[in-house]
Image (cartoon, rainbow over all chains, first blue to last red):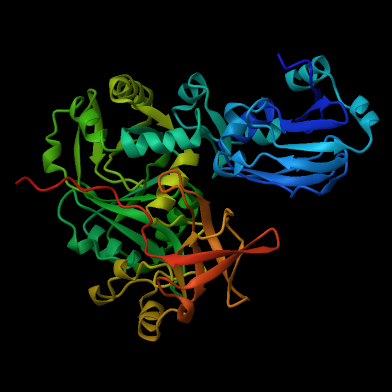
Length: 125
Length: 375
């Protein structure tokens, strides 16, 4: 049910590893839980992320939620389209709704994340 | 967790909401739908077609008896004496100090008067009215009908079309803030042209046992009109766009009507009523703070409880805020010191410890388009 080329954190973030870099987003499970997403607050490129620490905020109509880094690394690129179209996180969370890209600091960290089967089990529970 | 849920009350339409896949949340001691599909979709449906709301959690208290009018006049800040049969008015119950106990709609009915109040304040309202009644020795009676009464509200530009198809009542005769007893889908209702969305719409009061039948009839007839069921989430964004206050956010016992832009509701000249002396003083001296509308000029969402600054100094608080689906702007209502208020004035809202620019704008943020007069 979830893309199996990705890894997943307990906080419903996904990671697509591409060599020494990775793309990060939130899953459709998280987006559905949040409801209509109306705002995303992201760090600037150059910011250092620490695995499992909060790096930004996603806001739905009714609530403010933290975003947690699934891996450590330096932010190389953020998805500027989310400024005007935060609803992409609901519409296409694994594709056009990608949040940011990092240069991985400790690639082994990815091993601590769930694969799609494990994440499937977590969200089914 | 399940213990808490077991104590929540349910409206007569609970099973319908479950059927429709609603996301349910606790609200005022009830399990209520916050959304069915999407708050934004539901909001837009009310602005463009017709949305259907279950408001059965709200309180309905009937006042009857020879001195029903005298009692109602004494209890609320507005003048029920000005109401024609079937007519309704927005009003408030205040304390002796002029603080707001609840905001409500008061209807003149065949039997006397009907007060429709917030679910969260129903017990306080009934208790307060009961005390006033016995204290003042009025020849009147109260009947808390809340549990026996369901309230279903179709709201939006196509609401009249929807209701007209299900009733023999001539809706042309039913203007804004008017009500009539009648049958909708064969079910006895009080049909009121009132609402909390800023659109045309109706609030239909019926016996709780008929609620499901009425809802289903409206829902089915509304499908070709683009009807969607709407929850509390869109109810809140709609009323905020329309500049309407929410008790608990803009209004509470520490707030008087003049601060909240509701001075026009208070009829000091009608005679004695609870809170009159205190409210007269506020009116004479002017309120110390004022409720204003803000539009964000920087990109951040203002929310209840966020601080408001002027010239870098913290001096106000956001009462309600959201990203407005209709306007595409981030908007808020906030209290600021009266001398700081002025349309066009610049403020800052503090969001997660950073300041974002805002500008005072005129309320309401949104006004529904009026049909052009016939040529």
